[in-house]
Length: 281
Image (tube, rainbow, N blue to C red; front, side):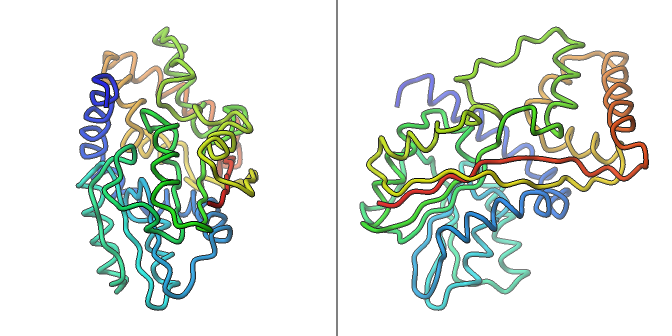
């Protein structure tokens, strides 16, 4: 792998390890939030029986753990760049009594599995962070058995994801940050309709489809929203770390005000939209 990709990978690995306590703390809220996308992935790959399933970018374990609980005699391999995130996934598996899972710390661009190993692959919100999305797709297609199913979820356009733009836009406006290059890893890198579907087709996958799935971030209050986003969202934390205390307070006040204006009844439930893309080998 070229130097730049390796650097991005190491940076991401360090970042996800560092943020794993935040993900553990906010797990119930975040998992409820992105459950509809996981459910759609599961519906599309319909794991069953003795299937061997690969869950890529598993984080704290979903949707891989739910998939494992649906198999009779099958097995799920959870993979992630971050060992600390996978440790949380292992803890969750133990708490739920799920035994047919294993974890592997690895990079999707160099999967440590033989060709034609898995019946199905799930990947929820991993694609936008892969340094080389084309290589990642080829690798996933390689380890999929002929006839195998793959489904992935990526975030839709910014206009449909106020939960990101409320804080992201406010930070960029106040700190005069240039928006990231559309090619760089980031939340909306895969939002363009047809982009991932095209990558799937390019990698030889067929019967591809793309479907919009919506969810709601049920944080209840603006304060909860702010605390959660500043404890799990690496890009925002990185940006805020460059702000002095006064600037940070100003940004927080603007975000809270924006949320309170949009949800005057005090029930903060922020809409979100994702695309779920499917393919077969």
